[in-house]
Length: 127
Length: 370
Image 1: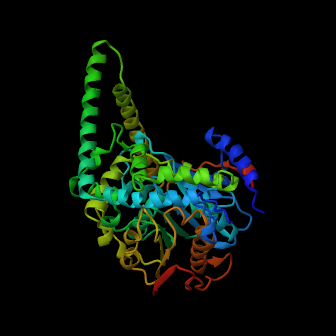
Image 2: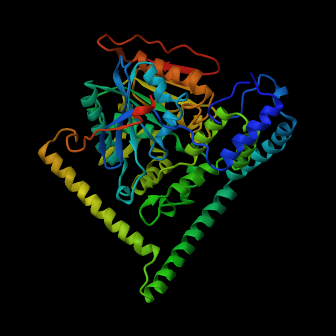
């Protein structure tokens, strides 16, 4: 029996090598899989899921807002404070990137190679 | 020789211990390579080879969503390894997981900034004056936009692998955003990124019974170490997504999903638009009949939308991942793709090779427009 390298089911030349328990499982699973995949594609399911996701997001936002107020009253930091800091750092990084880009373009209108080229090797010992 | 029943049970016990303890560590992404260029999260790798004899080099543009080691999964199951063995000079434009600083990256950032710079770096590194551009999945979208919007780029030919075009055929994940069921903002987090977990949940929900089936497959094949290694590698990749930049995601939802812009052949891009009909270089579109993520109906229209006189398509009997890793990949897709690229390349120091990839094989189909 040939074994695939990709984690798929092994190839069988005939049906005899499939164990009975496996054939039984497949007989139950396939109709369930088909039905669940069809249900997933239905308008009803997608509308319902969208509503649940929106409500979940709204509830999460309100919870975070409440926590921020409550923790803030005790002078404690929350996850959203960390995110605010993260976003400020990200903004700074974006500005640095933009400045670097403008600097490179003003000094060399060609492709942005010189300042970014850096050589590093990986897996050198594996072949 | 197949092991006896008793041997199988012993192997099952032994492999089961390492698997369920989480100690099965497949050697993924092991082909030796050099980092030749990087900018922010973009990394350009050149794979080491002593057999480079075909020009121009291939630049693989990987998807923003998934990890690139799928193209170099295992030492005996590697798309990159196959191309190297065929004599190609292979570069990979890879994306490190997006950080909050990448949240405002748009399609234009990737197509106008990173891709041209990576192609220039490829030419500088290899000494070539043009490249073969190959995009995998969403990387194919970036490659298409580059070829359409930047005619100044030195592209010899373009290959798209399982690249979505008609988003109305993409099923559950894109349907959730059509007609305002969900907005991009509903899945973008406070740092401006679409979290990897959201993407993972989306992919996992395409086949709800798969987690159970996978465990049954594991139990059935636990005795077979090579099967188990392949399974763990593939499973690791399937759950290993990158966060997606929010600004690019908004464009994807607004233009690609809601306006279905790629299907209409005109994508709003920068201050103007990118027209697929402006792509005139040789073009190959590869898609798969059993692809659940990018169904064939979603990828198929591309060949009719580009302006290339030499535009071909290959439809393979595999799934999204089976195209690049697995039995089908080894026997069919990799050779077909390599043949097409070779036929649009040249031996180092020689003239371009003649076409050699026009035949049909097995259940696959290929059509060519010249």
